[in-house]
Length: 636
Image 1 (cartoon, helix red, strand yellow):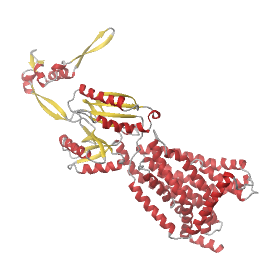
Image 2 (cartoon, helix red, strand yellow):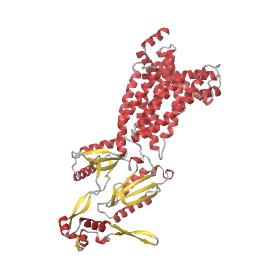
Image 3 (cartoon, helix red, strand yellow):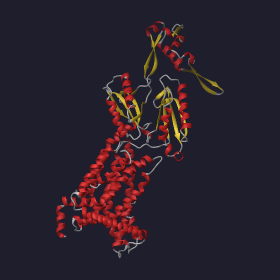
Image 4 (cartoon, rainbow, N blue to C red):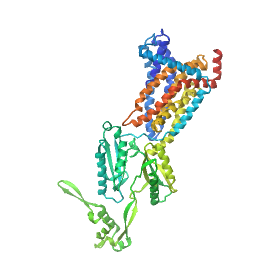
């Protein structure tokens, strides 16, 4: 995009020198700039109108939009300045007068091929410009196809990226000991270090801790992969994740979930989808647990979803100790004394410090492990009453076994439970949203779904993208209307934009890409490039018309004159973006997401704009500027 303006300037100066062999380069540069200065300004202003509204969007999508908006807008401003100042100066210094079209060697072959292309283009214009059926029919068909294809593109937020790291969550049965959890973590370590090939550089495991919470029956592994150059596509983090999910599913008495972090680390700790199942009607923790289990059972039977899990600590057996406060007062035992005894015996309590070899060490008191393992152990615990006598705890307390969640969560003031999951290969996150909504609709009344993390951001981005397109479209129209001081001319430019959008959605859908944030940026780039090519034709057609040509002749000769610069700028853009479309390795997801759609858009724009832009100009002038058209017709 940076060199487009310079290409247009150089091509126009070169054309002037080829048409008039006696013309000096400086004079050719001056004449060329009189013709194209308005077009250069118009194309840059359109780019600004497309991208500057993106800077005002908030949220995670707004951060991504802003990077593209500021970078491209600033770069195009510099490009315009160079094209209006340095480029014509260099043309006047470097180019030579008396240019002759070469007819030998490679350049001769190229020129002959281009001449045949130009003649074919003239033949199309002769057949189609005055035809009122073919081009309007093709235009309507392309719009219908673009809408249908756009609706079929799967939705997403950001493409998954291989960042060279992943996590693995482990959850054992409720009540599992820490030793049992460590044994299962060792099996995970054995797989990643010995069975996952040479992809893993190292890992760190922790027992008793997980993203779900802290408990003896949970654990986590942090896996670091080797550099991409040492792994390659076959040992990508996604392939290792699939191998780990299959191999570690054989571990007994454990649920193990390998997960890949999202491409933006601030949006959570796992890719895929996540939401809160909320108890909207206050039915209680037991009803919420039943609804969660019902949802998980249905979700794990779905053909679209996989690894759907409750991201929390499952209900576990708990021993409830009931203190008889009346009997405690009768025996002179304060409740605070009972609390201190239980706290010291079960959890340990800090007593004092002592010095050993010059270092201060702390002293903790706690019952030895064999004397705090069973409920009957309370018979061995005694407390001192107000009279100095010892009272057995069993005389004051009785216990019962219960089942409850060790961790309670709330979302927006209501009880909730977080659920995470992934999609089957080839299934988009948009389809996952619909599947989750379907399953949630089968739950009892009073339970709802609130999206969080990256899923929430995707929902917000999908809601705001329509506003973004509308604002950018209106900005382009009003800027063009102010630039040309006409409401009609912008219409002939705006009508070209759907031709580029058709190619963008077709390429995105055909190559299996998703409707994500990068695709949305790519669509806006396509809008700017399509309008830019249309302006090159319309600006010349407007000048021809103002010089007295009929609308047909003005459009015809403008399309003929602008064919070469349009092809040059489009081919430059295509060749510049092509490496992104074939990228692989880290970052390739974003590179393909933004480049494939733009490539499709610029290809279709290049193919269609050289015919449709003059057609739209001619008919817009005939409809909205009848008096001027009639006057030019009489004078000619």
